[in-house]
Image (cartoon, rainbow, N blue to C red; front, side, top):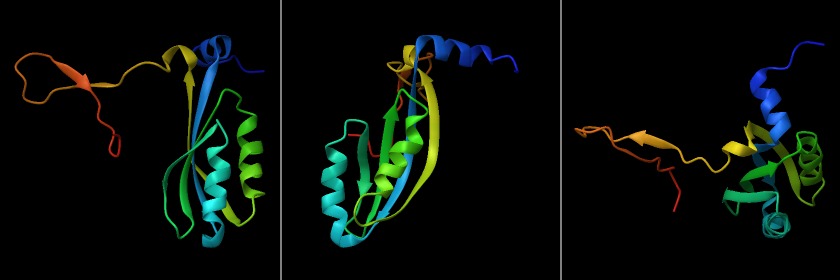
Amino acid sequence: MPEMNPENRVAAEQGALHIVSLIVHARSPQVSTLSQWIDTRSDLEIHLGNEEGKLVVVLETPDLGQINEIIETIKDQPGVLNVVMVYHEEIALSDVDDVLVEKVAGSETDTEQPVKIVGEL
């Protein structure tokens, strides 16, 4: 068995959070019901959606093995046509509360500010 990457070893010892972005396509008459079902789950959050049946859903779980199970559970919901994983990142739990910062362009000093995510309120 190959030696575990030191970074992965730390994540395994300290725990990790898996962040997954999904595109969910559903029949438009069932979008409201599907959205309500997703809202009942603490591990799922709708970030974008429309009445035509396209949703961007974020999944957060500490267990890598649950990702496929949750995707299959979403696929089994009435009206769901397809679910596609488009992003996956594993973050050590010790890093979850870190704030992303960037250097302020054109400033005379090395000042930093929190990164503004597009679409973030």
